[in-house]
Image (cartoon, rainbow, N blue to C red; front, side, top):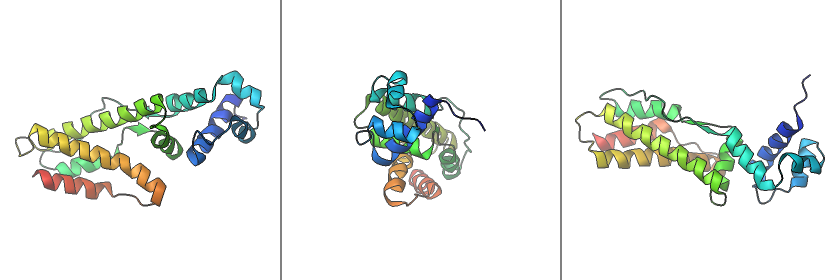
Length: 181
């Protein structure tokens, strides 16, 4: 059996606790207890509690930027549906909860969430432009549609956490596509 190193156990415990209770409500003693390490070891790896959060965001969330978009001319709904399935955020459900919960109070978290939103809007705008060549989708309308699509996809993370309900991304894609054609 492989025993995870102390730093990984600390980050795993912090991820679980921050996702469940929030950063402010989590004390380093709670992290140490869950990680089964002495509290001093946390401070050796992370001098301040904020350093734990920054490490989590930097190491456990990744926004895939600049990836190709799979667009089908004449099929904006299908194009957006495929885009929704390829959300450009690689992070566990717990890390996604942390991003949305802590974005209001921590700059590095807000920056990561902003990059995710920007990348999602960029991809949606580009995909819609490919899916609707020469259609009524002028630049301003495509921008609004892409922004709305990104907002709904990102909001669904919060909605699911709060209510357990998922928004059907295919239905959102169909609604947005219908408004553009």
